[in-house]
Image (tube, rainbow, N blue to C red):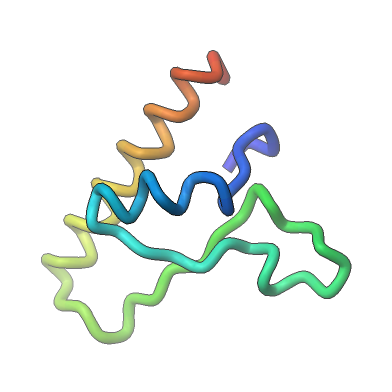
Length: 70
C-alpha cells in the first residue's frame, strides 16, 4: 500500500467489509511495515479469496480517495 496508509488503522474498516488481515508491523522486528499487510489464503475457496481481495481493494481505494492519494 502507499506509505501514507497505516495497515493497523485500516483493520476496523476491513473487518466491517468482512475481510481480515495481519498488519505488516507484526512481521518487522524494528516496528516498520505499517504500510504492508499479510493475508491468509490457504483455507478459503478460490471464490471466497476473489471476493475478499475485491472487498479489501475497495477498502484501500476508499482510504486512498479519502486521503487524496493517487
